[in-house]
Length: 89
Length: 369
Image (tube, helix red, strand yellow):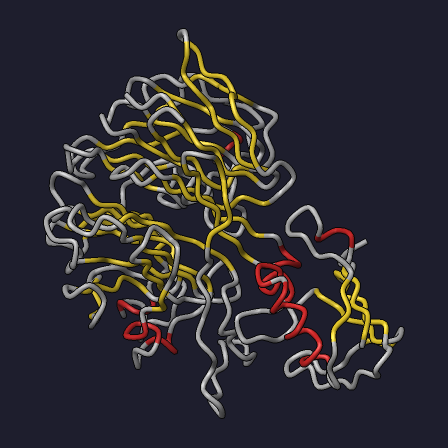
């Protein structure tokens, strides 16, 4: 299963511990994560279930590119990092 | 008079109390977070706070007996597959809440009902004190809604919602830009209001089109709901027939431009404004911060300045940052430079309560927290 880690900056808003979850795509993995942490979902996904504008996801160090449907593939032991993109200086 | 103020700022929510003859900050909540608006529901005492976490989206919190807790936020339904809808710049309109720009309690006969206006233009209704929200599809899917445009924001937004105190099914909403919309059946159907308004920035062919109007704020007299006041992008307008027709007030010094308007809760002829230089500068004229008041339905205005800075003042007062209390005697307003003023005599004299707050987005009176 993939290991999913969230930016430390989210923790003061909503608890997002490191978790493991199965799935072949980013969507499948995150769906399983948010089943366990329902309140966290809206902090990362917008109303249409795409990534929020300033949220970035890295799968094994590579930026996930499909921000709308989250179809980027995930390997069985991938490391997924959910970050807030830096904006400004 | 109401002795409590909720002050929403770029860096937190401040509760300011009148105690022992003076005002002081007694609560600080959500410190560091962008609080855009509050609503205290006078029917039940609950207070709502809208937060914009930027990266992490828009959230709503409610203050209950045991303190603040996050509640549901308005969420747009899935965009129908294949639907293409672009804004005035040709970019797709997001079906996603960008900002909570209006919160309004429903009528006394629907105790759980709360209304919410958003950017990009959706109105939401909660039947259960904000535990759940439903998009008002009839307005979002109205065939004229695609003609709404961004004003100061890139996207159109609903910033004013008024519920008729005589009939809770009758509701007005104001859009920047998109004019005024009215429902008499609790949101099942909508019609445009606002004949007589004038958008001087528009081409002459559409200058008087009600849907082209950039209403900055819409206010209604609680005791005389037929009387409505509009602070508009290029002027002040008043209606005596529930918003069907408006008359422009042109002789307003130092300026008819501004964002907020409040009206006395009993006297429909008395209203207050905060004038600024329009519109690309948006600062007080000559660096002098003043409040304008009319007591005669707009035939004349008094410019009130006692207690307000009269040199090098560059305070901007946003549309939700001027408030009047239930008695119509006490007013308060906050500015983008973190100043907060209160008047106990309808604006004749102002006292500065704080001058180092973060930029103030909204000021609302409440009963003591």
